[in-house]
Length: 382
Image (cartoon, rainbow, N blue to C red):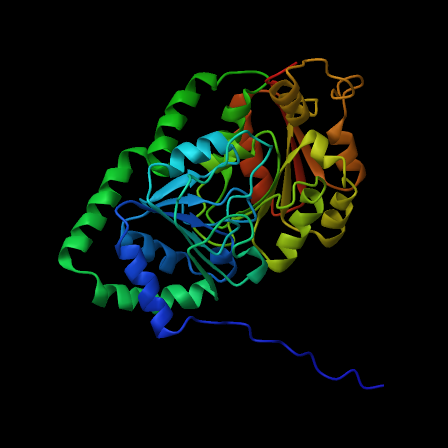
């Protein structure tokens, strides 16, 4: 039997010159444009081009609401962080702008239900994506362009250089400078300073614990995150300047992280992988750690252990106004993650003090062996 050869369909599509000119002319009309950076930027490895585009047009950049992966370099001065999935906050943010450009992302996937729409009434939208089903799906879109985002950006940049005049370049630079006091880097610096007060907590204060895990990462570390309660803080603290820095919980369904870390390690041989996992999330596929041990992968599982389904508690309070927690605690008996990990063949350590977190994670990464670090976290709600 002859199996034949695989066929790869080349789907890279670039808009024609007329469309690109119309696109640029529409952007030139905006006085305060904003970019929603999506996961296709990482998929097609065009962070550099996306950064140059934001600088050229003087646009603030927010990362799309669902954390598929790294979506825009954190160190870029236009990076304002996550757009969030809070409709009220998104509406407030977008109301400061007069044009939204969605680059290779989902257009405002929100959760949970709210009494307002996140897109301001009348806000014009440009959406560039290779996924035709996302274009014009939920919101009116003035320009919907089905195209490869990397090819589109690479074609636009030299055209922008030609079409923008000196006054437009000056205005764009002024807008970028205006963002610097409140951009991701500035807010991170303030946040790190404020978290220092928790350096000696035991068990660790959650946000400080996340900071210590982040500080232990090496520049080539890949983070796979399934940590619903503390992911927002991870986004505020973690440097992610390469398309393969981070992979996250795309669908909202729990259980991918333990096995997903193995997939990331196999896809990037030799690079260290740190999986930040909630104690509840880890139990959906805890057996995956045997595969990490079997394949001797450089994966470090960091369990942020608050002995509860904290995200469910938080949402019960927010959505129902109730603190009657039924079946949401995992403290009687407490789960012994060290015994579980060692039983599956991993090196494992328990960290009780905030001051010990960074060293423990750093040592696990440096070992190059499959490991687990169980960090005791003070729950925000008991």
